[in-house]
Length: 121
Image 1 (tube, rainbow, N blue to C red):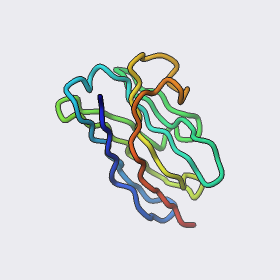
Image 2: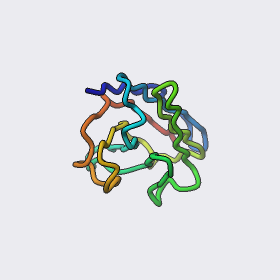
Image 3: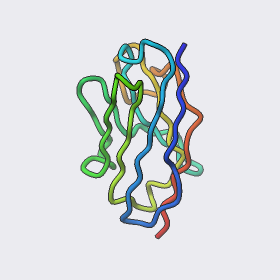
Image 4: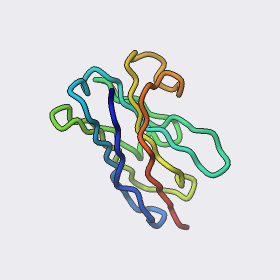
């Protein structure tokens, strides 16, 4: 069982930065591929970034967002720079025990409650 708790969301102006954190319970954090997803108003949940040794990003955030993880702290981060109004969404971290198909929401067993990010123009 893994519990995930996100923090760090908020309101920021376009062009600004935010850093999200996701703290995981349990002693097997390193056994999971970790990812960030987001869900904007009226939209489906979409993949943002993945970390499991290597990293992978959606095309919409590549070059602006950076995912990192600290297995000693059971925490995964998402540094978001040059934010745009289109980045407004609830951001979720998620844990994938299979390390397969990282862009597929159905591969994730555990999800956090989400943290709201709002980017004003």
